[in-house]
Length: 505
Image 1 (cartoon, rainbow, N blue to C red):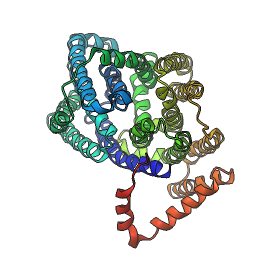
Image 2: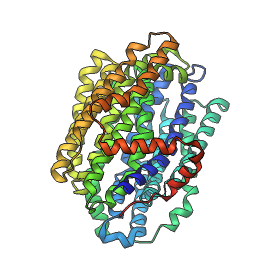
Image 3: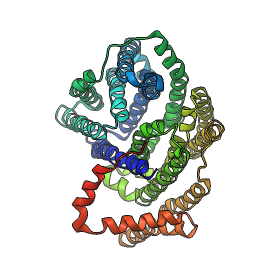
Image 4: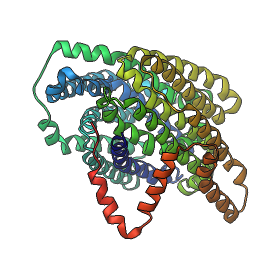
C-alpha cells in the first residue's frame, strides 16, 4: 500500500506542476483583467459570468464521455481492447461536439440577451462555445494520458497550451485592443493547437472499433453521470448566476476574484490528486488492501488541502492586493476563507464518491448532486438578498458540505470504507479557526501582521498534533521525510529516487 500511496502522490506532484502553471497563467492575467485601462469592474464581472458559462457548456458538450471512458478502459471484459474503447469514445466526442455547436451557435444572441440584457456579447459567446467544444475533445485525450499514467506528457502538453493562451491573450488585449473577445479567441486557437500537438499520440492509441452493445452500455452508465455532471457544474456556478440576477455586476466581480483566489487550492491540489488517484482507485478495486488505501488517501489529502486553505486564507489580503490593481475589488478579501473551506468538502467528496463508481451506482450519484444543487439554489435565494457576496459564499460552503455528506452516506452503503472521520472533524474545526483569524489580523501594521500570519502557518500542524491527529507510524514517516530531504547535498539523489517509485499491484 505504501508504494501505491507514494506513486499516487508522485503523479499528483507532476499533475500539480501542470495545474500550478494553469493558475499562474490565471494570476498573471488578473492584473490585466482588473486594470481599468483595459476592463471596467463590470466587465470583469462579465468575464466571470462567461467563465462559468463555459463550465456549463463544457459539461454539456462532454456528455460524460470521459467518465464512461475511464470506467470501461479498465473493465475486465475490454482490457485487451483499450485502443478500441478509446477510438469509440473519441469519435463519439467529436460527433457530440459538432452537433451541439450546430445547435448552440445560432442561439448565441439569445444567450447574450439573457445573461447581459444586450446582444453585444454574441460573437464572444460563439467563440466561447467553439473553445468549449474543442476542449471537450481535448478532455478525452487527457483522460487517456491519465489512465496510462502519462503524467509528464500530460503536464508538458498542458503547459505548452497555457503558454500559448497567455501569449495570445496578452497580444489580443494589449496589442489588438480586442477586449473580452480576445480572451476567448486565444482559447479557441490554443485548444486547437493542443489537438494537433497530440495528433500522433491520439492516432497511435486508436484501433478502429465499433459496437452498439458497448456504446449502449457506456451511455447507460454515462447518462446518469451526465445529469450528475450538469447538476454538479450548476452547483459550482449557481452562486455567480444568482448574484448576476439578484445583485449587480460589481458583486459578481468581487465574488469572481475571491473565487479565483480560493480555487487555487482546488486546481493545484484537489484536481491534481483527482487526476492521479483515478487510475489507481480503479486498478485497486479488487486488491486486499484497497479500503485502507482509500481511507489514508482521504486523510493525507485532507491534511495537505487544509494546510493550503489556512495559508491562502491568512494571506488573502496580501494576495488580492498584489494581483488586483483596482481597489474597488479589494472587498473580495472577506469571503476568501469561506470559499476556501468549501474546497475541503469538495476534496472529501471527490475521494469518497469512488465507492459509488466502483459499485456502478451512477444513478445514485446523479440523484445526490441534483438534490444538492436544488438546496444550493435555495440557499443562494435565501442568503444573497441578506448578505450579498457573503451569502453566496456561505451557500457554496453549505451546499458542498451537503453534497459530500450525501455521497459519503450512500457510498458507504454500497462500498464501505473505514474513513477517519474524527480526524476530518479535527482538521475542519482547527483549520476554520485559523482561516477566519485572518479577518481579525488585517487591520494590523504590515510587519506585525505578516509575523503573526507566518507564525500561525507554522503552528497549525502542531495544534492538530495536540489533538492526536497523527498516528505513530505517520509521525515516524514525517521524521524520516524531514531527515531525508533536509540534507541538501543529497537533493539530487532524492529527486532521482522519485523515478523509482512504482505502484504496487
